[in-house]
Image (cartoon, rainbow, N blue to C red; front, top):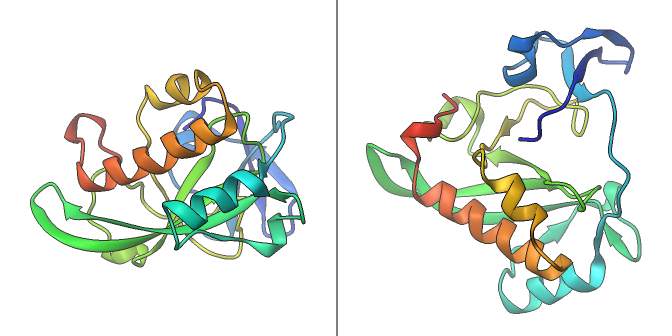
Length: 182
């Protein structure tokens, strides 16, 4: 996840307080959600790049209408197979939500399914409420401390999307106990 200062908001979007250090990384209280105080300027993912991946590598890619336009993709969902946990290598299908509204920066990645209560994977955080989807509790995926630098070093949008999707699959198939989120 990106290092930045967050605020804690109520269900109506009113700022309640600046997030404490524990709240920066943990889940919020019921009826509250965490959101960045400042969002970096940047463009969403282009629909052309998105469609090229959908047609060639990831047929399960689907954009989220509420966050997309005719030329940009602000959010998308993709199904990615992974393992249950480091101690249970059984396969499970994760439905992933990616916030790509500012694709210049490392996107936030969330798990929509399985339900949070059924997730045992060490690199998936506990459920919380986030400004991106405040009406639903979702689990953020830990991409690791080195991922933002690697993402930032990509030279093109296509390279960024390919790295992101490959990295999500790698994290879900290879739990990292040294970077545990649970």
